[in-house]
Length: 138
Image (cartoon, rainbow, N blue to C red; front, side):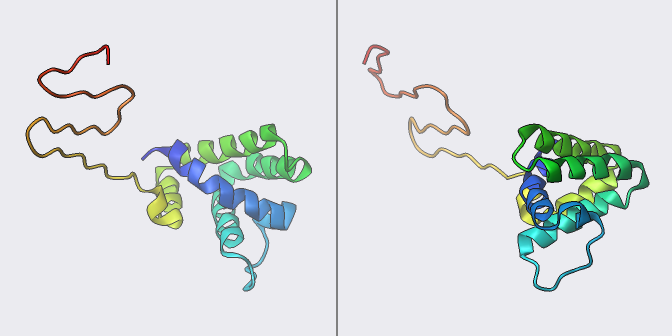
């Protein structure tokens, strides 16, 4: 499981929850009217916060984000604390990915080519040329 990818998917939800609840995000009671994004972000943060080894660092990172919501460094610090918690606890990382749903699953890529001179590329950063008289100078 790619912890960095899971964290990247979680950050918009986490940021929305902090924006809505501030420091109270870690212990806010379920609000029936809460927006789905904010609710998921709050649940993700609370799940990490339930891990005793992550509480102090997460609280600090959330407080910094509340104080500086537009600061890229506070976002990076929060992302780092989430990443550390997930990297240290594979079961938590899986639970996090499950909470995020299909978006957290690695995308299956299928590439196929059929027929004479057919070309298939999962990624291409250059020119693909086929044919009997293909020339590089055209």
